[in-house]
Image (cartoon, rainbow over all chains, first blue to last red; front, side):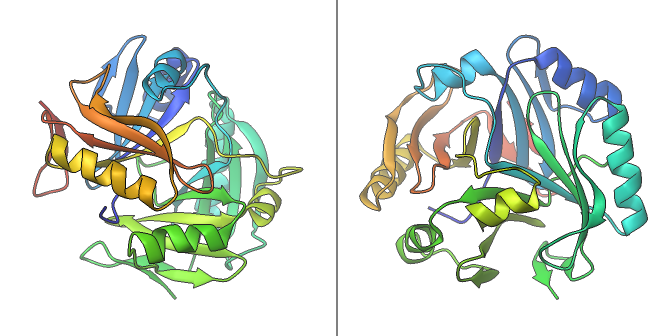
Amino acid sequence: MQQRVHFLTFSTPDLDAARAFYREGLGWHPLVDVAGEVIFFQVAPGTVLGLFDAEKFAQDAGMPSPAPVAGVTLSHNVDSAEEVSVAIDRLASLGAELLKPAQVGAFGGIFHGLVRDPNGIVWEVAHNPGWSIGDDGGVTFG
Amino acid sequence: MQQRVHFLTFSTPDLDAARAFYREGLGWHPLVDVAGEVIFFQVAPGTVLGLFDAEKFAQDAGMPSPAPVAGVTLSHNVDSAEEVSVAIDRLASLGAELLKPAQVGAFGGIFHGLVRDPNGIVWEVAHNPGWSIGDDGGVTFG
């Protein structure tokens, strides 16, 4: 199996809250938005974030009941510490729960903050001076 | 905040098991592999999968204790139903737990199977005839 993720899909108890947060709040544009079922956002070249109704998610995965999202973090990198603070404040103003205010990270030489979205997805916003993406999409750690 | 995921990071109780599964089993090449701390694999242009020691993950996210991975699925798309079956068998042979044998999916007109990796990450392998990636990385649903 190739080293490639095409979809990351989250169990989503409240799709309306997800729509309000990502579409109306952050202004993101969905590839697909089916009320009561799923919202897809493209979040990297060839890669899609899926917010899938929690009952259908469990059914599709052969699980007996929906499980809250846990043990995973999505990170969005920005170009400066200042932008971290602005983004964390913005996410909190849209109703995300503040988990960690913008600060120097314990690992990796980064400046970051973390919030939890209305459906339990944890987002980190980070400034990582040692990280870069080349023209070919290749990631480098400095 | 832009519509972009740069890292997806999982709480990983057993990094040695992760290394055996992804590096030795699947032959994936890490960007970084620090024993007892983290393994990074690039899984899309500009996007990295991080397997982060569970204790450090919790500490970094300001959580009181490690939480098992739940409520999320990573999907890898392949070009045929036959390839789904081959990949699911391969993953199971490497020690993944079979959650759903390769079969027609309930949603989206796909053929898929699901497994759980040694640290709780659920992978779907899918053939989705209505999905494609353009030369610019743009995803289309048919």
